[in-house]
Structures are given as C-alpha cells and as structure tokens.
Length: 98
Image 1 (cartoon, rainbow, N blue to C red):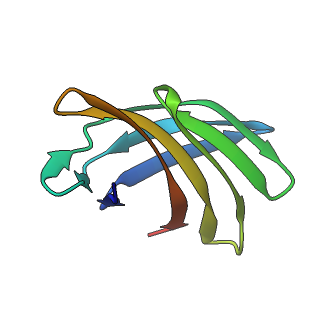
Image 2: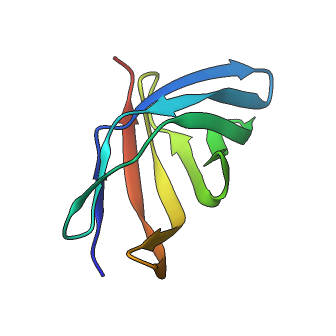
C-alpha cells in the first residue's frame, strides 16, 4: 500500500532537551482521503540537532534532525487501520518553519 500524508501543521516548543506541542489538519491519502485529525506531540526529545517525537502515541513515531534554523527532515513509522485492515507504513518527512 502506498499512502501520502500532507498539510499537517505542527506547533512545537523546545525546552532544553524536551519537545512538546500539537498537530492539526492535513490528510492521509491511501486511495481515499482520510483526515489526519489533531492531537498532541508526545515523548519529544532533542539531542543536538536530532529530534524524536510521537503524535499522541508510539503508533506514529518520527525521528529526524534540524537541517537549518527553519527546516527539519526525518523518518516516520505509522501504524494505522484503514477499513478494518492494519498497516505499518514508513517514509520520510520534511517540516519548514512558517
């Protein structure tokens, strides 16, 4: 299965080595559009330029690094259920400060 996730808005706050915040909006397209919803960024950590965080739970886990003062890139592993079928998806992501 091939899916694409787009348009998610992240609001992140770094305090020392902790990363917290929220996400909202966007869609997940796995042949049909699903809203990605909204929720909390949890278990976020920052070590140097490296970041790791979840969207609500470990079912949506991202790791990456800051590539500049305004951009981050990384990898995500997502466990989701579509029409009663469970999938584990992995791919890359890019986030830009706006």
